[in-house]
Length: 148
Image (cartoon, rainbow, N blue to C red; front, top):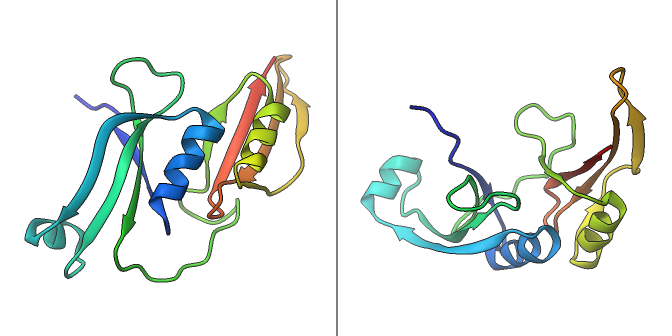
């Protein structure tokens, strides 16, 4: 069996990002908080004296036991710059929404930002996408998309 389980986001401040994803994008607590340390975590991460805290959030649109967004903060982290949308590796997480403009307003009012402009584009099959790249309060890139 193979089943997608979660995406992990390392935050500078997990409580702030957890609140953002709940308020701006409808993620919800499922009671899976973490405060982890110990030799096993050191061996797993390759980090001496690793200590992390955070929470798994249920993603909107999944009832029951679906994939989660895991937001953790390590007690010691290196400084690293935020990536751009064309940086190799994971670039963004996407949320399908009913109203992209309204979702972007929520993101902005909860401390997020914008990357580019909200655009509409029609594909060859006649479907139209309304889409925008935004950021969470720590600069991680979000895609907000709506189809018609």
